[in-house]
Image (cartoon, rainbow, N blue to C red; front, side):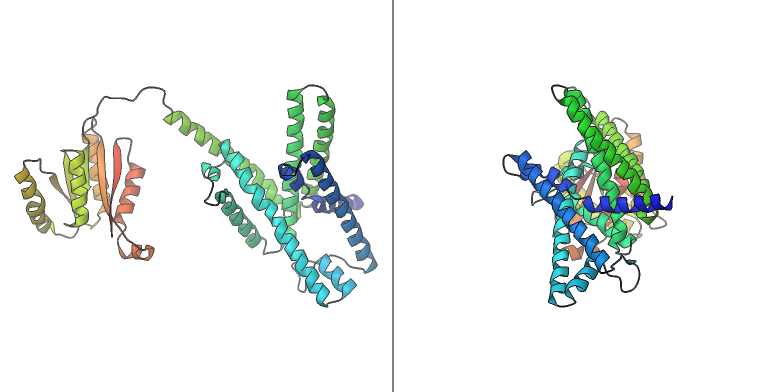
Length: 409
């Protein structure tokens, strides 16, 4: 039994070393014509080189009595580091060889950064991931997928203490699961397509699916305690998450779908509400825009600083009298008391109350706000406008419309 267990661990480690050859099949379109023949030749060369390298490493390790050491122990060295120092010493060749290995590993990471964003885009196209993964960045790359990959990579490195050896089982399980699913999918493809030679192709891909599936089981069992248990938990969680994302998008699509002409009933002017603090260019711009929208305008002041008389005098002098002289309807000034000096909640409650009192009217809330020139100036001004919009978006409904009125410095 012990021999079988050791054989399974050795087999899983060997299979892990063979991962990466899938990059050829993923990038077949990049080969020159005839693409299929050139891809086969490249794959054959890679496999032969892997066999030579693995055989050479095994023979040299046996000849120099080199074995793996614990990555978490002090003075840890990889097998390749021990081999180079044993064969060539610790001279210049050792550092050149180590730098070459680092360069190869850095270049091999390009496979993930090239393919993962395309994969997330394909999944997002079918509504199993947020649609943000479908968006191209300014460099024509799916940059959100790259950012997500960087975040996941950083989280894994932190979780495993930067010891990459512990991440190999996760990679192996993901790779062989992808092999198994792709081979099984191709079997179903040949079954649906039919035609001459399809049965033979089904047999070939079926054998591939069974072989990679058995390898997946062996790797999962042999590397379970070495970190593979994370994948066993993470993959079902991701499946449920993707199903939930798709269910959400389907629900949204059904709710917003429309198959009729535009409605022309109830096109009355909205009842416009403008929060009022003090008289300023920002307040003036908000009131002017409100009066362009409707003759039914309410200016609401929350009296949290006990300045009601001052605001009323300001309103009469700068708003009411000039508008009366033109014969237009004067906006209504409403004061809300706030004994605990809360500003936003009384305002939100008033807006919701007005909405309930006018079930046949659209309520438009104009939110004047100051837009600073530099980002570092933002903390110097209160962010009540942003919080008010957030409250209205969370607690509002279809009949409450929030309109931004920016004043740019």
